[in-house]
Amino acid sequence: MPNPADPEALAQLPLSELVACHECDLLMRKATLRNDEKALCPRCGYELYAHRHNLVSRSLALVLAALLLYIPANFLPIMQLHLLGQTSDDTVWSGVLGLYNSEMRGIAVVVFLCSMAIPLLKLLCQLAVLLSIRLDFGRSYGLLIYRIYHHLREWGMLEVYFMGVLVAIVKLADMAQLSIGLGLFCFISLLLVQVWLEVVMAPHQIWQALSGEDIHAGD
Image (cartoon, rainbow, N blue to C red):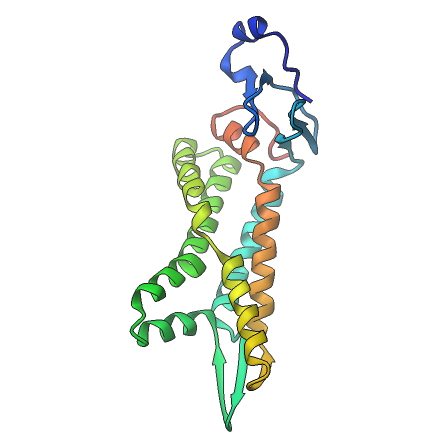
């Protein structure tokens, strides 16, 4: 746990040795962490930062897994609808096309961006950042890409789309015969991998690594 210390003593320290709590704004001296340790604010208990073991290797594995899941999650059938002798396969992409062809083009664009384009762009940004750290090449571009990634985080809404799919399944269950497709399992897997990636890819370590500091991120 970081030491808040005396305000006069803190004023003598360089900014690189200080950290402020995002919740209560307490300024304190930055603590050195070992693998898998977390720094908590002594005032409010907020997690300030963490040191993940094998951060780059684990994050790269998760990013590649998410990219492999991306295509089947968006283009394989999420569910199959049987109604009045007709059968239709519904995918994320077919949902976007359906909205577009129904003259709801603005909604179609938003769904496409939030459920397909931005999640893919986020994964590609994470991949580029991790490769710049692993290969020790182009870290200045890595900093720019990581800033872009943080601006995109709020726009990737896979969990919102997933809740919409669940609502649709519940409402249609009494009206027609439904079969769950492989695409839904891939979509859920993609969502879980991205959540896991957010946990593993500690921002504090990534910023330090992109700044050229030796944080043993690849240990």
